[in-house]
Image (tube, rainbow, N blue to C red; front, side):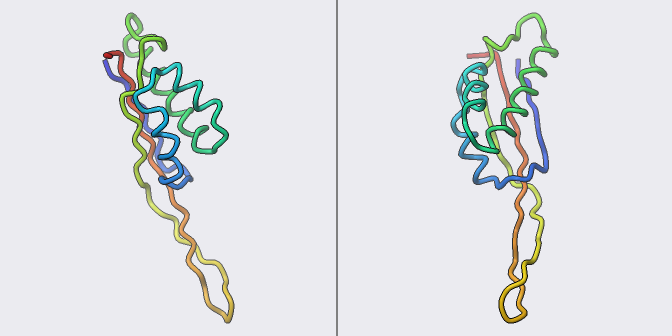
Length: 113
């Protein structure tokens, strides 16, 4: 049985979030939760919230068989969201482009090995 959670339009660059997502992929859910609690990055906090939601979805969907101890992170995918385009004043009256990137976080947990 699979359960998933999606967090959209998160204000972090997908590149930065993927560095944390790679660490938890394929790990048991309990170990992945411990990892994201210890990693001192904004991406770890955001991925941790989505991971907790996916675990809760699994427990509520099939309460008889799914517990945190039996779940593993099947996939942790960070997709690109829309980019907010802003401008910053530069020298000689010019404007420099600032791209504020957003991400979509999708985490799937499963109880099959």
